Image: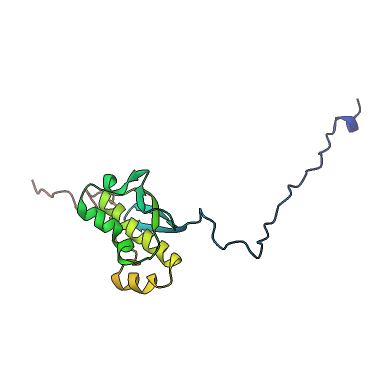
Length: 161
């Protein structure tokens, strides 16, 4: 064998064909499984809210019914408050994925996420939700613990003797 025989040649790489979707003139604007998504955050909780218009009413949080996920009535009202404030004529279904933080922070994150999704869904929602304060992210976070201290600002107790 010679040195030329040992050199491997690269095979030509085939490019994948990219199909472009062309919208027909008589095609409906919305697909039946189309949804509007909004992301809400509070402290360390993050909620991804998907609203499906024109489907049966219902709200599920992490695969459970929201009444089962939020045991108290106050948390249920908090999570539903932005949806309840808009008088949307069609029925809505909400699928929510939430994680992190505590249960109250999760409910507040759902309120912000559903408010952002409603703004994408209807034009009239922005003024109503902005006035109620449901589109403002609450920036308050827990302060981190510093070294040499017991908590964020709590110093160890000082003893003279």
